[in-house]
Structure formats: C-alpha cells, structure tokens
Length: 126
Image 1 (cartoon, rainbow, N blue to C red):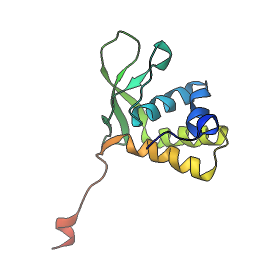
Image 2: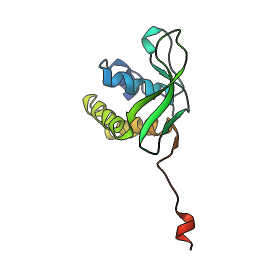
Image 3: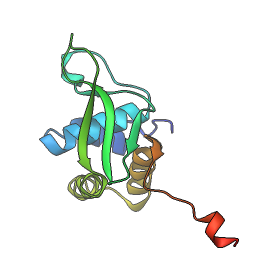
Image 4: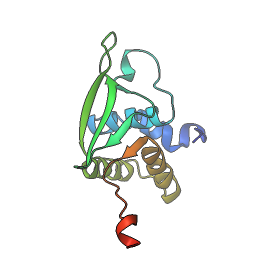
C-alpha cells in the first residue's frame, strides 16, 4: 500500500495522534508500509513481515523497543484487542469508510501467518 493524500490523509492523521494506543497502532502501520521512520521518536519499531497470530489468538512479532536495543520477540496481546484498538483509533480520527478500510488493510498486510487458521480438507473428502 502506498502512502497518498498529503496532510489530509489517514496516514498523517495517524502520525499526529499521540496517545499510547495510537503509538502502538502507528508502529504497526509503519511496519506494514515498510517505513519505520528515523529518530528516537519512532520507537517501538516492529520488524517487517514478522508478525504472527498464534493458535491461541495472540499477536507476536520481533521488535526494537528503544534506540540501541537488540531486537526481541514481543507479544502484543490478543488480536481481538488489537482490532478493537484500531477501531477506536479510526473512530477518534473520524476516518471515512474508505480510509478506515485502508487502515485495516494495512493492519492485515502486516501479518505473515495466522496459526489459528486450520484446514479440514482431509475430513471434508472422506
């Protein structure tokens, strides 16, 4: 997904949000866009294409929490809570339906694998 729209875009609105909830969501979107930014104000930084959803529904990714720190694996909590965080953020930013869909598309693209997904194809074809 490409960042477009200038100062009125949902991306700029997200970058200007300052609470702790938006900070986590902003880091996820930056990682999804492969643009973690520069400088000390852009932490935490999550690794590109490393986020997974565990079979239990928790989100895990590699992250660097502060400048100069090594990358560690972190658990960000249940995916349902993160979805709620993104919904609240979209509401606070008063995003249009299109911008809201693009925000969630960015969020979905961040995940490398969802281990909750299972296939019962063998059972279906007995």
